[in-house]
Length: 110
Length: 121
Image (cartoon, rainbow over all chains, first blue to last red; front, side, top):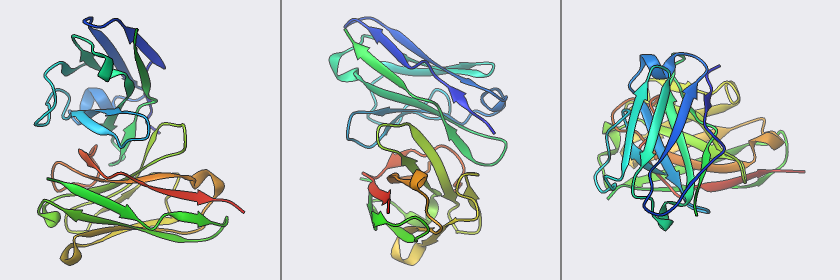
């Protein structure tokens, strides 16, 4: 079964840029361009930040950007702000015709 | 504005059943695939099930296959998740989510606020 591995935590100072990686155990990320990224604040529903690897939904800040290289997808948050402190999840379509979520990354703003 | 409101959560004994509902508004419901995602308290997200725009194609995670059934009623703009043979490990917040297109198997885009299901004796 597919799995997506993310670092447990990433931190940065206000104004800095950070990058969160998302590595697939199988080659789903490499094959398909259906990778999304979500932000979740405590007690809230997830919010989609990126879809189809690098596209931002309307209303999402351009400080958030997505990319992929081989079987690893990445989310970069530039000009880090206090409000970016949250949990972040990646998700990818899989060859089983389902989707899978990453293990999640807690972002701390120092 | 896309709105998704889940209902039907509650406390159920192991082996019991529960039916979740999701009422959709703010978009043309039968244009889009729909998904259920769950999150155990303090844990990560888990994709559970999806259904395409017509209801003709359904998809399940291995952890719920054979126990859960997803369905939709496009005339009522509603999504359902029938959960049978519930286990303690099914305890979670269940989120209804909308796709970006008619498929139900791609990562979702818009999310409801969730409903809590607790399986406990």
